[in-house]
Image (cartoon, rainbow, N blue to C red; front, side, top):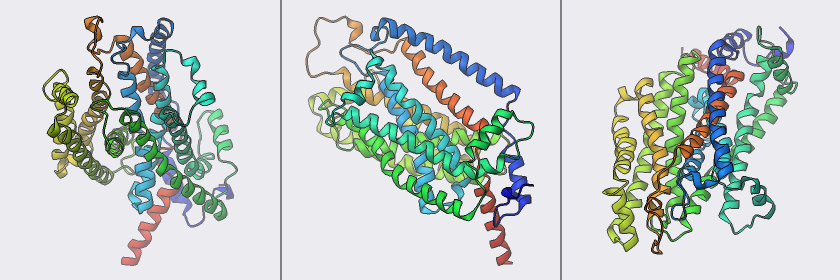
Length: 450
């Protein structure tokens, strides 16, 4: 074994054992090729549909003058929300000192990178002239919340990408000599990305300082990304959006969707990558408790968001609340509130529901309800404009997404799956060196007790 593979304070046998388990999925096999081929074929179909919208304009969607923000903007808000899980797990819980996040922190960052990367593309799908996107950067005005949103989304994506990659450099250095029977190109890429890492204490010192700086930067950026997104709605006087609590309301909702996405990813990687020894029932229990906490906070904001205007019942607020509670959107509204929040909170009280399989089912419901919740935030308030609607076709009065809109929206989820698939198949999803240190520390404490 090369002397450069020796890691101070860790046994070589432990590193070899962990590497064999964690690097096992880092390979190109038949199932991977079939899955990635399916995703790319589906994406090509969706891109062809997008070309139709590009040629004919946004008239092929259900968007009109009355409802100018629809499924695309709801999807953007949802993607921004789901990306906040990286900050919550890696930064907030990491800074507090919870060591149990070590095996799942990288999974959280992969989810964050994927959703943050595609969030910007979702905005492009809502543009009738995407060729004018550079004008936002060239001629953007500081007074415009759109410029704020583009800036924080881009910044958060870059910081998330760095926070995923930098802590992985020691693992890449460990893996570069242990990728037998892997494509030679992958081995060369590992050699380049390891940056001649030799596990010197001074290297770890510099790396730890860099990661701490990233954590300090990414926490306010992550909070800003969803706060600014909420301001895009809250700065208008429209009923349903005219709220002073939209900032924390959006942030708490982001933690719910992001945590549920993390649990789905944890279950997939644990089962398909055979990582049961590293992503254990204990980790599902901890994340389930976190999901319960953020869901209770989000439930409080939901009650506050509707209770206050319902008590005052101003004219246009009354229209909006009636549409949600008993009108056109009542089924979706109560499905979100009960099926996506109240019932999951009740179920998470019980220990047997905090096991991997029940959590997977609960998380899928909450993840789906989180998307539908963004749709209910974006679309219904536009149905009751202050100015009277006259001389327009009846179908313009109620927004209905078209097949083209739905297909293009599906493309964004396919892109997320492609990014998660590639990052998880070509790089270890569980830290090798950090896990080895955790196990060594636990063994040392165990010896001290005895």
